[in-house]
Image 1 (tube, rainbow, N blue to C red):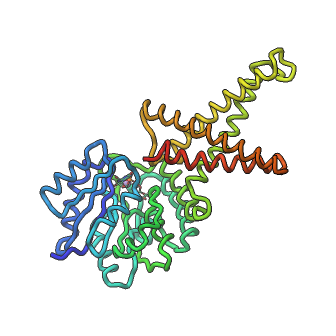
Image 2 (cartoon, rainbow, N blue to C red):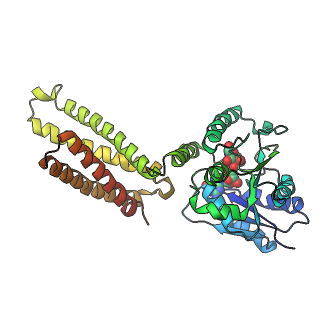
Image 3 (cartoon, rainbow, N blue to C red):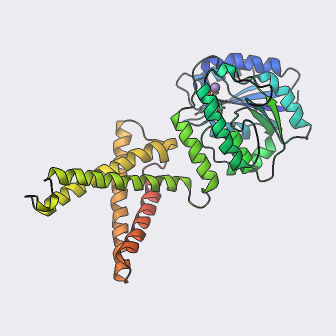
Length: 373
Ligand code: GDD
Ligand code: MN
């Protein structure tokens, strides 16, 4: 049978759902040449092993096991790029998406009348009852409104994780997709230059069969990052914006710590019985160390969430490298600012240039030296 459809199943801890999922695909796609690509991010529950077991039994099952990376969107992109089928679908592996919709979606895409077919939880005739979480429905509504603004395409459910399109459409623009977070459909709609003709299918969003959802605070954060990326990312790269924002917060932390230490040295720093310098040097040093550590932790959690250092050893090495980078960044900062002042610049603009230069230095070096590989 010729291969007509590739179905991408991004998985993270879905071991218990996989076999029944493949069974359902097999039934739903009877008479259609298909393959399924499981893209697993090295799930601790051994989903990839289960997928390989299934692949041994049925060669239409293929497995991509990614090491050291996490993310639904990027997994979906890699899966879609990995199929030779002319049409590709992405769906959840937890049975919340009904595979019986696949043949109708395929017919819509293959007819050439539509550039993309997707299943909507909020279209006429759809339901989210089994979701049993009104908070998620509400949050979803809000996210939808923002999403429609960004893409300029009015869909009832731009956050859907269940869609299908010609593989070539995806491949042509894959390198421009951000790959961050859960919002892969939104990402495609926002990235593909020409307006896509979209066919909507109402979905009865079922309850998850086994395991639990991975949509957590990090994913919501990534959603916001994704929006930023689409809006301003072209001018100020997202990572640098995050790095800079966290740096700004670091300044606030620095000042707060400095104030605390100065207070420890005496209620009023200026009339303290310690020499002024001692208090200030102690305060400035502590504040700098705390602020730098604060920056390191936040950058590790947020800016470099995808390359996060874990465990005591890597964290300590990372911290030391970050400290070293920042020390040189400070030298660059002070050097440049001083040079500008000597050239006759006012102190504040000179300081600002120093800060920007130091930040760029810190960013460039730490991205290679601390979180690079
Ligand atoms: N490879 C990989 N890596 N797969 C992942 C990851 C990851 O980091 N995180 C989640 N997945 C897989 C899950 O294993 C599942 O098959 C699918 O992606 C959806 O994840 P869920 O954790 O079940 O998401 P949900 O049900 O809470 O969220 C639903 O709504 C979102 C928007 O509101 C899904 O339909 C999402 O697709 C949708 O974006
Ligand atoms: Mn789910």
